[in-house]
Image (cartoon, rainbow, N blue to C red; front, side):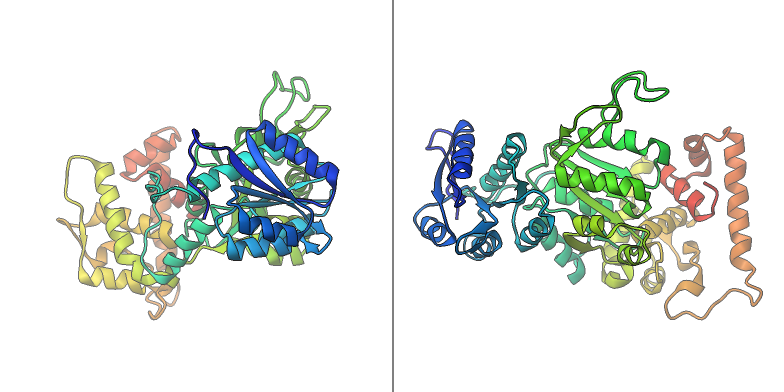
Length: 458
């Protein structure tokens, strides 16, 4: 276990493992200028001896060593010194090896020739992790408005995995259906890691016009195109030091996939109209509800980018996979809706039959759909008890229910038409101000956006 960090005590200690004297000297000199002492090893065997003699705060290892490779050392450290962050140094362009090291548990990687700016950022982040691990007492949970509710085995596994992934800088691909909380999971990975005090920048890849995408991602220089009245930073620059979350990454056009791949591999971006690249320090997380592997097979998504983003995959379980969490989620949502409504009212309760009905429903829209159903039910229920009839569930989507719609299939389209008409009337009355229309309808702006999308009215 790492020693407690005290600024008044001796300096931090790093283990440098490389058989090239010039590289060892460069690394030790750079670390020394950062106030970090170091011990050097030329082989894995020497590294093992030093690990047995000293307590290190950081390890930097080359991938190619006389008696093995850096991945062997990463695995040894993971097994015997789990709290020690270890980063690997790879040959330029050896992304496959870098990805293998990340999968084995490496904190991060840096490519040769070593960019000292990138190295310093890596070391600073690793030492923050080391400091967190070496606290004499457990660190109090960081306050966050982001809550991952549920006591099912699926959610307990997710929380444990998030805590582990937060200690790494490896890219994470979060898969799962719409409405399962993929952005929430990404935010928690950020919140619990060494980048928590830096920006978390989410971007919906399907919401940016294709012709503006390069400028939005990488920024631009004044005069680089018509309308570029001044220099502008992109999303990568905005997330510098923090985390960049690509939501619906499957919607990226192919030409942007190429540019994104280069930015991730080189840890640098070139703004539109700029002559040189700018180093960037971001952690990449991404998500999509689509089957990314199938898109790779169909040629719609680059295989090399897929493997670079999907270093570690984390599946966000559907609500069908954790039905036992529905009572807790429903209670939380109802309390939240009551707080938003104000007036100090008591939160509505679900009748036993209503709760049973919810637990038998298939929830194609997952937690987001549960929120929508309960928000509607709160406005329809009499008194403070939500009955089964207040839920207005389409019964033909319940897993064991017999389709209740007429043979002609007219009921659901009819209900959709009524809802569309009500929304259109509200939009027309408010001159298409969505915020005002949502208020007029008695629902939240988010619920209105969900319904517009669901009904094809965007």
